[in-house]
Image (cartoon, rainbow, N blue to C red; front, side, top):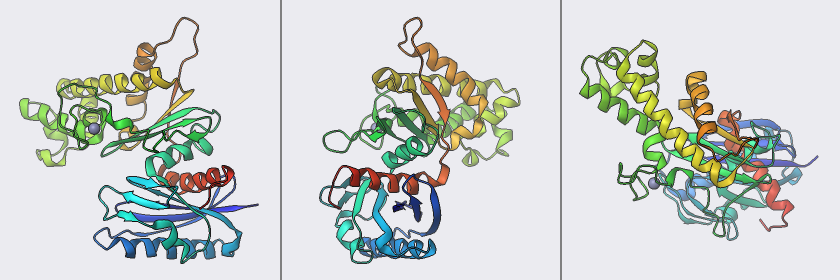
Length: 325
Ligand SMILES: [Zn+2]
């Protein structure tokens, strides 16, 4: 049995784990990234963390077939260089050669949202189908497109920026420079913004009560909570959010018709309050003729392990393609 190491480079935490060749996680470790440091120090810690986790799995490094790294931003897997990472001090960092100085095994790089989508496809919510799209509704909206169990990266490995198609022309400014991107309305950040705006317009709304009168405490949960208390203002915020989310997801469905669309991120903790109306609206908006099978919407299953397992399975795929790491 071959083994793989997956490294998940996040803005807050740096995680690594060992998986078997089927993506079963055998052990994992996590340290703080401390992103205010120099890139070279962070990369060195990535190497040491990989070394530690291999030792914890009671394996010698030569039993590791390859190491995969999932990072924010744009990695160049051919050159083994992280070109750029949002929120982290990485600019043209030769990650492959630096990690290999500590653990001398093939190293492959990929975007973190893409590897999370691959994890759902290999051992998570979409493991039973070849084509899936994973959409994570967090601070931003991230995601990845999996076609025939493989990451669809486009010719330049930059595809799958699911948060950045425009849903509301001329809408709120987006971090990418456009306005009204899917991310600006369907991220937790977008939902919080609309909840606060509605509360300001309606001093009588129970939104104020839910956050103890302090609008800085509004989270992605607040509108759902106030709506459950019977507040009409909050219900309108929730309804509008669901409507836009359904439009966005239906756009993805109509473009690619995956068997499964996986959604994750904090907003999904609302469970059926989110899922039931969402499924029915996307079914309605999808371009399905009579008798045509419909895309299924499922909740993400991999949680905090998605980055580690996905990175390890990405490394497996690169080896299978005969790439040099
Ligand atoms: Zn954008």
